[in-house]
Amino acid sequence: LQSIRVKFTEVRNPGYDILLEPGFLVKSGGILQKRFPGHTPFIISSPAVYGLYGKTLQKSLKKAGFPEAKRYLLPDGEENKNLGHFCMATAGLSWFSGGQPAKPLVLLLGGGVVGDLGGFVAACFRRGAAMVQIPTTLLAMVDSSVGGKLGVDLHTQRGTVKNLVGAFYQPSLVLVDLSCLRSLPAREVRCGLAEAVKMAVLFDPGLFRRMEQGARDLLALKPALLSDVIRLCAAHKARLVQRDEFDRKGERALLNLGHTFGHGVESASRFRVRHGEAVAFGLACACDLSRLLGLSGPKAGLERVEALLGRLGLATRLSRISPVRVLDAMRQDKKFEGELKFVLPVTLGRSRLVTVRSLSKVQEVLASRLA
Ligand SMILES: NC(=O)c1ccc[n+]([C@@H]2O[C@H](COP(=O)([O-])OP(=O)(O)OC[C@H]3O[C@@H](n4cnc5c(N)ncnc54)[C@H](O)[C@@H]3O)[C@@H](O)[C@H]2O)c1
Ligand SMILES: [Zn+2]
Image (cartoon, rainbow, N blue to C red; front, side, top):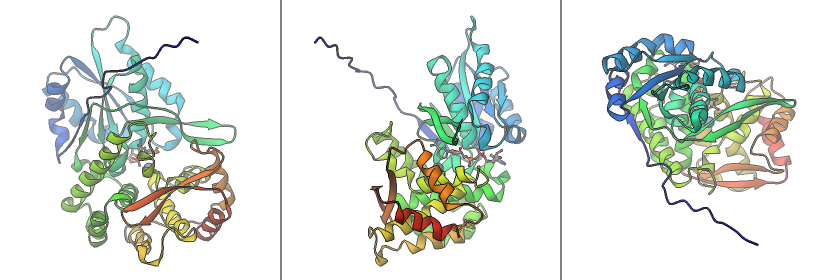
């Protein structure tokens, strides 16, 4: 046997910055020109978000000397995070091929749907174009814009499987402009807060306490606490991503807290339940399952999770969704490998990845929360 080993000495990614400042969008052109000279921007956004912020971004780009950015506008909704739109957005970028000297700089202006699909386009175009995440939903600011997990859902004969096709590809920069949240509908604010609660349950009891005390301020988008929540969540995510970029060491897997149940509910409801709402429901289920399996006792304080979600206007019980269909969808999940794995909280600030072989306890949790 002869063998050849392929060794890598080059660090694949030198890292990137997450810049947070209210009113950033106005200055974005200058920031981008400094970091990406010689590039030509291409915007991927949604009609609604581009309508709100496209002009500001274009104006700022022009002021900094960039040519007017071409764009692809992805219609709203999880159902559009699919390969059809992936192809159309990529076709938009094909302007950069065929002898064009311009280097593309893909700007992802929008929520997690734009970020996931548009980022995947950037990852694949010429095997990787420079890409900047400009998240405009709270959910994208606290979670999806950092970490480089990108992709689309796939419609299969058995239903839609979330994020089945995708890649790991890090952005070159993340620009967070808090003032974009002013136009965000209240329902979307709550969705973002669900992912922030997840992060606090996983890593940060201090942040959890502050969210309990400031729940009203968060819903009212008061900037003091909100900017801390965004900064701390992004920092927690960055820390995990640095240690486990490709989700292989089990550390990054912790971010799936609430997501095994959550993805099940999202799919079973045909995406009527939004991602953040499904995560809130999933967090409550994970606390139940932890108690039922004896991983957490009465002193763990996990009842505070459901109470905080309630204060933030997030439902932890849902109706008109069949528990059987949710369990089915959980088994269709891309991560399902014959047994269900859950991240379960042991106490506030500490969770564990647990393989659950007997489904009866999972069924019990679903039956009680979907009554
Ligand atoms: N890649 C990751 O690590 C990761 C992490 C978490 C979630 N996700 C994915 O993110 C997606 C959910 O993202 P989302 O919750 O941001 O939803 P979304 O992208 O669908 O956006 C929600 C809605 O808000 C609107 N909107 C966005 N910004 C706005 C603004 N500033 N003002 C007014 N309206 C605005 C959009 O037009 C849309 O209708 C899911 O597909 C989920 O799987 C990915
Ligand atoms: Zn999520």
